[in-house]
Length: 281
Image (cartoon, rainbow, N blue to C red; front, side):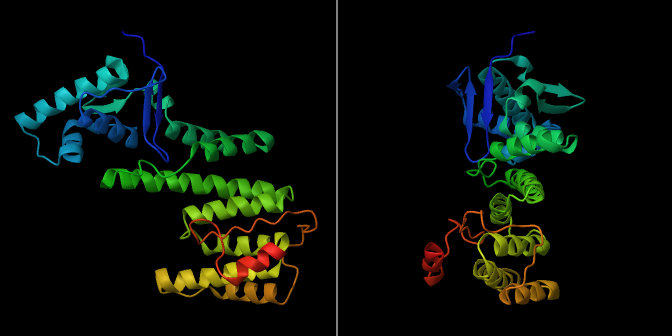
């Protein structure tokens, strides 16, 4: 058994695979594709599934030979024959390789958060959020990458939402807003109740105008992207906000800094005259 070199696999937001601190040298692009494909499927894939995903070919003697050569090149590039294992016909990255990836950090941290409470839970959620620096393999448009991309984005979104709840419990309203904004920016299609929650938090942190502005953007988003309208309780909440009613009985606005983040725009900025009003608030 060979000694596994120190590896680092970054696939969230950027793609970078390092061996002993240096970029891995690939004999062929297909070897790199194999490693990335297996990173998207930690449970492993059969030879035929790999051939179909990477080369879009049927299993033949020719494609089988191509697979064997690519497998050897991938193992050599990672520095160990044990870097990619085979069991019951399924090929997968070894546990050591997987543990060197940011994807592993994301899910390991979420797992720790589920089994802990208090400060330990907050720390684990923060680790998960920090591990996610962007979409999984953003340069690859293959179906297998897109499927994993959506799963990892959902995991990140869940971490942001769960941490926002902890912030809310400790009356850190401005931080709760930031995490909710991050979650909704990553996936504005999540439950409407989270948009309601953001409206409520914004009414505490930035006031009724910011909360109303988010409601209006959400209504436009529903109309333009889903051909839908907000739920009656969302409309009712918006009317309460506009009327200046105190929605959240826990939050205190006086000491909370303004955040000015719009979750439905790519850069978080609110265009037009509203942005100027916010800067003067």
